[in-house]
Image 1 (cartoon, rainbow, N blue to C red):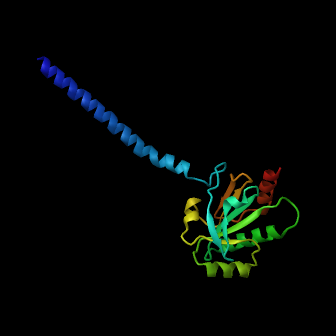
Image 2: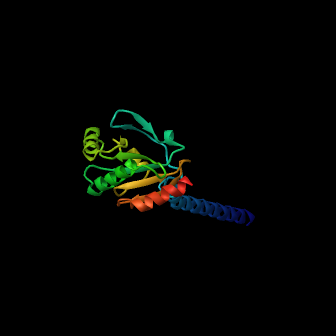
Length: 182
């Protein structure tokens, strides 16, 4: 009788351990995407802007971390995006304005065609660098879903604001840049 009780208890203990392990695995599988998404979402205000290096249409390799100490406005765009052209023109007029807090503007083209990006930048008279994200790796890093997508990065490399699928209202951009500058 004792042997049966011992084996029965052992089977129950093994079953409980198996169920606990299965529950832990299921909980981890459910939580993993949430944790991964939270850790990899740089576009959230207060998160560090992920560093990257891209080639500009003038042939230079530019790295975001080289602009630490500067306020940076990143704007992601594509040639087929009409609102992107309006956003680029608006940012270009801001970069040409004297006075106020200075910000470095970097355009990130997601087409992958450097010649086309350069032609559009030239046709718009852009005075800021146009970077080409040929494999859209930086676009994925910043989770760009809708264009234009603009990111405001402070002097410490922290994302302070994002705008998606619209031109940034100039007064709002100015206000945010001035807040960072103080």
